[in-house]
Image (cartoon, rainbow over all chains, first blue to last red; front, side, top):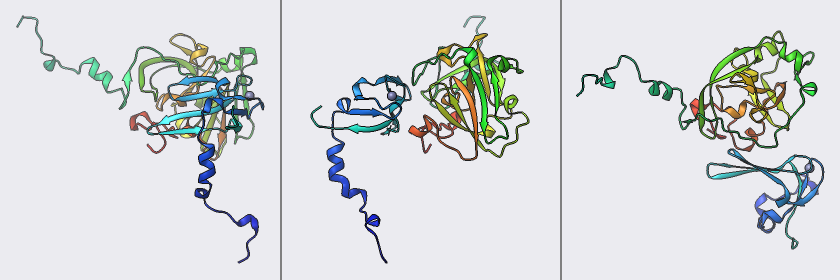
Length: 92
Length: 204
Ligand SMILES: [Zn+2]
């Protein structure tokens, strides 16, 4: 069976080293880009709507829900669809 | 024992607090307040710019201006409401238009709907949970206009499900063939949310 380069992949465990480098940071200094309007700035400058069901962090410019977090029993659910990208590390 | 003593156990009917207890789902407590939970800023849409739309899997979308909407037949209903953050409130009085009225005569093959709101909030519901006298679009609360902080000018009222399904600032219903999780349903909360089955979270 012939495979192309595009077919070759490893499972996600192989990315463990890099993911561990990425997912260890002080989150409030991460630069987040809003998927709604493209504005970029530190997570700490988002507006927090503390809610009994979860925490909603909104863009100060366009109100997009950039980061949504809910504690569901012993887990946290994190939804970042309102964030186009995160810039992590780099001595912010 | 004084002459006026009457043992509670010998009264002919159940005590009122026991009757109230039967109306509180498992894990809930009774409150007299009306807590405000907002996941974003309170929208303040002027009534002359407000409309309500039924769209999606329909032959022709339906749209009402505020005045047209308020001219629809409305009713006053008294319901118990249950928030997933564990408060319940009994005998709340609402005035609004039955969703049956909004969908009357509509031909659709949809089984679900998504409620769309000012501010971008959404919630998903089976169509059968908003028809047959189970849901309203309400504009009045306790004899007054519904306050913006409680969802005014109009919110959905689906009292048999957890209160996040009763979407504040609702502006439209999108009828869809396939279910699709809304704002909280996609963040770990139950897709259906029956308080009597304590369906708080995904997997309950
Ligand atoms: Zn933005």
